[in-house]
Image 1 (spheres, one colour):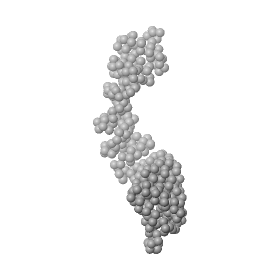
Image 2 (cartoon, one colour):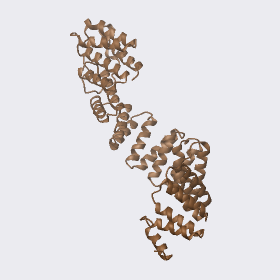
Image 3 (cartoon, one colour):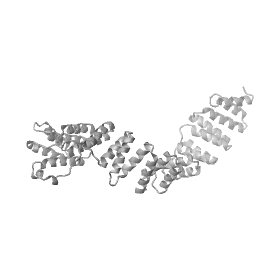
Image 4 (cartoon, helix red, strand yellow):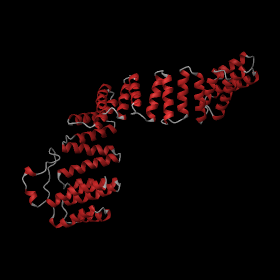
Length: 418
């Protein structure tokens, strides 16, 4: 909470204190401010401030306005320690101290004082429950979701609040706790009683339906959100995710491609999902085109994994020379020899035997899991170059590894070598 927010809260409390005992307090009920929590189960206490503490209380307020934490804390502690302090003064002093610690980002200490402020039970319902709600938010900020839920459950039970923002916030908390059924119930209610539901309510409910594997309902919300703002990236991504959950891959891809074309989806993760989907759907040329576009725009960074994806797309698209080029780039950026081994395999298909042998040797030097495969490739490359001695040496090495032992020994035996 910022200091400005702290001062706003304090101003409400102290203004109420200053007006007590004046003619304003005698106005008819018609002129009184409508309570924020009219259905609260807690009886609104009759506030009876001590006139003898008025000066100290107002000093506490004045100091808080000056942004002097140290002096404000001293003044608040003086009010708290006074024998004249009743429940009202104690509640105000405790919440003043609590908000100062919150403003200093010391949430645990702030929380402790705000809890004591509630326990003192001296504030009006409006202030009492505002503090309770803020306490729950602080627990949420501290990622103490269990304690936050305790506070919010008490808040909703005691206030019987039907305000959409309250229900939606608690629904969001249940979502974080993976209590998706309860999150859906609260969010549905928040939306139902809202004159115009906030987009965030709909987005969170859509995500909740996704987690509950209720894709039809999630899709309907997605359509509603798209109608409200077709240029919201989160909405586009979420709708695509819903279609993917229903195995509607082509539809999901079209939504993502359309979003990219309209300039809505511009991040690395968007391009990556699109080129992976293209490849999954065996649309290799479009996968490669997406990668090249991303690289040209600087959205995608040249990495071993990216060039591996490009190489695989070229390979399965039967563009073997282009696959070799992409594997060569992947190998340059790779720390181990896996991409070098893939390059060696492709070069063998292209009948580029010296280059294949060199790539396989490079794979061995950098480190590769299936070392036997590299030796088999070397052996095959030597044979194609009529180097029988080199082939024998390579196959003997391949016979030392489980993955190639059988095939290597078979070749050696067929060659008359024991």
